[in-house]
Image (tube, rainbow, N blue to C red; front, side):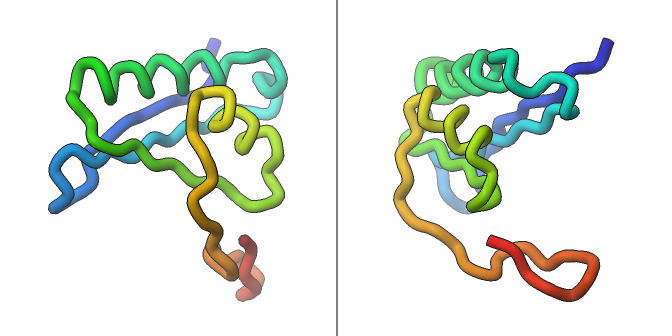
Length: 93
């Protein structure tokens, strides 16, 4: 049964910098799955890949995703405004 995906990839031209991402279907929300997966790739990034810095982002209003990142050791360093273009032509943070 598919419960989502998690990934870590090196940021182009920035040796030692990696980006972390995850997506889960709504049926998997609130079960600790994203947090567990994010913690695994965070450990992998620093302890196996030798990362200098890991980054991740989420919609400003996505409190669940923000909590996943906080529980995985990430801190807010900044925010984007009008970052994601929606199908309607509007933007979201």
